[in-house]
Amino acid sequence: MKNVIAMGVLLTGVCLPVHNTVFAEADAKQVTMHIGYEAALTERTLPDAMPRFVYDTGLEFEYPKDGVKGIYVTGPSAGGSRFDELVQLVDDSELNSMVIDIKEDAGILTYQPDKGSPYHDIGKDYIEDPRAILETLEEKEIYPIARIVVFKDNKLAEKRPDLSFQKNGEVWTNSRGEAFVNPFQKEVWDYNISIAKKAAEMGFKEIQFDYVRFPEGFETRDKELTYSEGEYADTEGDNVQKRVTAVTDFVDYAYQQLEDYDIDVSVDIFGYAATIPEAPGIGQNFSKIANEVDVISSMIYPSHWTSYFGINNPDEEPYRTILEYAKVENERLGELEDPPTSRPWIQDFEAPWLYSGAPKQYGKAEVEAQIKALNEQGIQEFLLWNAGNTYTKNVDYTPLD
Image 1 (cartoon, rainbow, N blue to C red):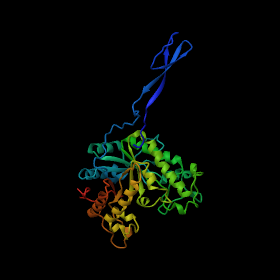
Image 2: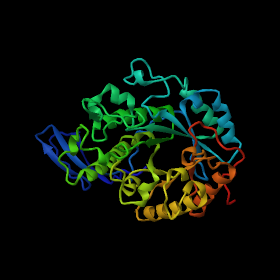
Image 3: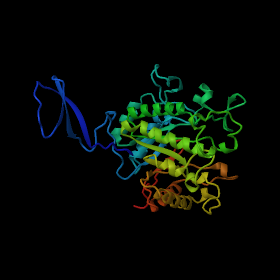
Image 4: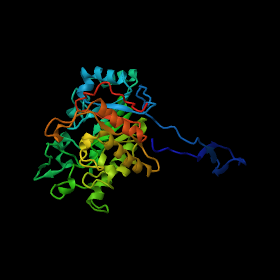
């Protein structure tokens, strides 16, 4: 974790019973208080680091020695018949980790909390027994990461419109019907961090926060929407800087709140955020966010780039696209005093929306090309995204070996 509590010398007050005698000790300063008690100030040396409370889940997971190489797993997949198949995929390959949805894109929990929980109404029993899932991963030595979607949240927006963005008195949604909650509101921060703490108590070794941002294109609609800027209303800077500050502050706050759980904290971020000073609408500053986490996971799917890096159609050139991105990211992370681990999300799916005819087929060669490009730039960790959890078979996940 980022912060270490350093302790040195502590002066402690000790009350000692005395009679009418004044003791002259060379190693203590004594003050006679009337005739009954004497306070002695003694110098006590403490260890360099004070032990602190760390939550013990009873599960043991080791960070993969060759770095995390993982797949995304939905709640239904984790709690259903697909789970054994995905475990087998990881067990039979160089893969070693799973990113499992705990709070997914609509604001739904993928497990059912107890009836007394404030989150009971947003829970689904996709994962009937999270502990059993984690015990299986422990047995198979598969590193567990909990994905928590933060500011995209239809459920919370519907329940608490005051914590969302409104237009004409109603909760605003984008063209896909997705609602967002307000990163300026610290009540929203605590709502999500409490869920993260529950995931850590289950036994997950890392919390991965996703959608840590304002809605896309917010710079074009921030004047037409109604929302509170909370404590950020009077901060210096324009609206862009206010958004960047709020998003960065959330990450820092979440990190501090999770310190007692002996876990890593990671954040998903748009890949293009590393190529510009900051993304003006969504409030993501790559360097500032990277400075507050253990792991930064840029989403660098070739299909999601427009003409970039001098490549007309990045989806058709996965190796070159990832290679050029990795060069830029390495430069940005190299500017930080204590950079986080780089663990990008890469593509294991097809993008038919880019093509009028048959889309480019993404298979073994395309997945390996992306990993090869990362490895050549010294980036050893990665995560595979496929929304349906249908991953390419027979991939060599260590193509340079």
